[in-house]
Length: 107
Length: 115
Image (cartoon, rainbow over all chains, first blue to last red; front, side, top):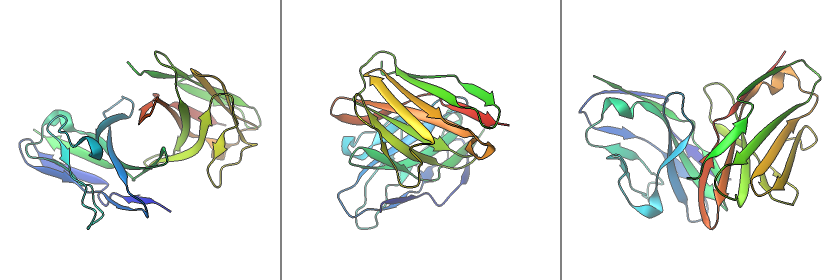
């Protein structure tokens, strides 16, 4: 069975500092991975997906099959990045979510 | 575009009663709809997958007679929690996909409290 692990429940950084939210997965097939974000009092929304290989709001994530990781990175965090971030793995259209990481960016 | 709504946003009911939660895709026809459950400070757990006109597929451990899902149209799926008990209190979230793109668009969630 697939599994997604986000080892950090809480992550705090200062504005302008680099940030990395960790995500590891276990899956027997070819993984399709996503990062979803939930800002305060808002619904869950897609941040980025690995097949797009794009940067959204300055965030990037690279799939590393050798390390079975899909860490989310941003070189310079902003206060508006404070939110809950979920890593998710798609298996035949169904998503398995990690536990989520609450990112707080301090001024 | 791709907005998903849920109604109600919160509901409080007595133990033993049934509660219906609606999930609508407002500006698109959803290929598939999903129902999730989220406990406080925990992740989203997929409960079931729903396609219009067919029976929902439930995840292991989810009682289909307890959580009735009806997907009557391409824009509406309903989740009915039957004979609700306090342990059913949770945050229920639906999502929908459109076309071949498997990006899921999420509703705002429904907070159910069973007294």
